[in-house]
Image: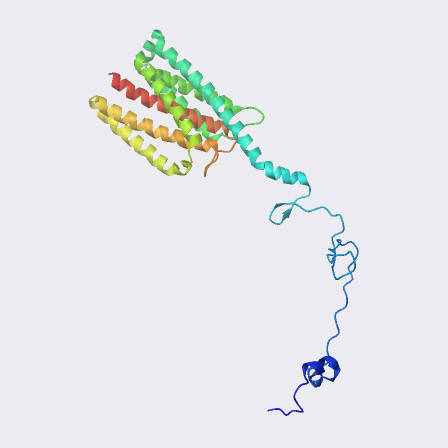
Length: 315
């Protein structure tokens, strides 16, 4: 308990006599008020009514008229406004590079298909050439071996050369070899079956290309499934060859050809989306030889399987 003598003064007395506060001695002397702030040189002008010196704002270190600092991303300042423009236009630059890459690849594929169609036409419409291939099948096996060797070399040397385009030369040799092999296979089928296969292949390729450019479904992540499908296609092909070696059954041949056409159509979808580049996986714009090679092989294999299907159907 406290007595009346020990009770603190009233509020009015404390205002009149602040120094007579008996509790002041107990808590120690009061601290002096903080000194007024004096801003250094080179500060921004402050807003009206600011408590400091007239017309000054307490932000030392930033001289008046200093330009605004722009940032390219969080915490990374740019040195000039041009860098900000370059950063904003970088996506457009990537799109233009990808479009140029796609045009280059499809121009190469168009040239390859032109050569292939020309050679297939020779083996289909020129009777002496057609009879020669049928009489000497070793020509077909030689073209098959050559095409496989050139393909392996192209896979190992898919980066473009700067001094001399050796990969373009190998691609040309590979195109001639595969075209020759395709022509020798076409010579064993009727002309009507060849025309049907060409028409269906063209429709399938155009449809797949339009689908890949329009759809939002990502097929680039399905490489494992396509690998399993290719293995199954190889096994089915071996079984079909064994079965047809004893007795020719048209529906077995047609079934194998249909499965092969479907599998390589899926490969065409996968490789086209790798070419477009707006999915999970993409081909580098420098690997245009590899991109053209993959698209060209898919188209030719689709044609060969459809040719087998139409040939078995016409028989």
